[in-house]
Length: 457
Image (cartoon, rainbow, N blue to C red):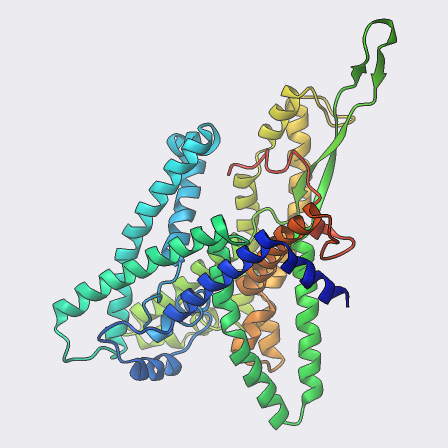
């Protein structure tokens, strides 16, 4: 009854209702484009080729997951929003190292953000041209191209179509962010991931039912639920550092009295790096597979060695040990780049605020840095454990497609995007004096005005 009442309250708010319907409409357009095949591509041959060469652990499998299967269908949205994500990551990394991009990100405000957006879009087009050519070469290598289509026509027309698809998908994401609900780019990725869930869920249920082990399927669902809860903990977990503002005088003249100083806190996230360490680690773990494919033709012993076979098997112990270690290292590196204790210390000094028991200036920056380093360790270990959960799920007999939802990028992105979207809906409900989605918990959006001060973004 509480859930039904909440749905009614959401529907009563005209602006929120329109935003949700607008978002659903654009998502439908994006999913429709994921089934429209490129001209000159035979989807039947491509489906057979990708099925026989399926490797959900490869970089191509990761792209196919993010595009909701459009990559393996040869669709006009085959590249999805991935070139834009790549361009955004490059611009973000340049902001850490190049003074010009640092100035645009930190000092030029709205005008700087507009310049960065324009640069990101241009870089997206350039990356799309490169990735589009590689994708078309991949299709030809799979034998999925109609031989009757002239070579020049095939390449030129499909490069234009793929580039237009990426730009259109980017435009859809921006429109969802502006006029819909939630972050548009993240929602498009999330919808692509969710699109695969019904098929793999149904396959797992059918296989367990045929084997007469529905109890094991129920245990799998319970394990998946526990993994989601653990991911929510790491995504929402923060360490609050208390901040004290100076006392102020209330009244005038002889009647003036000191008022108590305001209290606030610095929210240092347990997982400040988000999903980026997993993405970087997956890209690195894909290198051995690429090297094997390159050298195997010259030396057949390369592909048969134990180490190479292990590094191409995401369920092997060597693969997961190296994968775990890389994620921990990248979490520390990315957190160090994202969280800047000096920015926090400078902001507090300008506001005449202080952390109780800590001197302003360098001592405050060192204290925040020490707290960040301490909480990053459990956050990094927790993130790495979530990343290797699919290997454990596979070891217990869960099919590879369904196992990917037990951890890794899938579950981190799903939980993060869903929580962010629900928080926006919650804010609309509370502004209209309706009950929120929950009576207690982090989703109510309790925030500090110091949120984001110390980040480099």
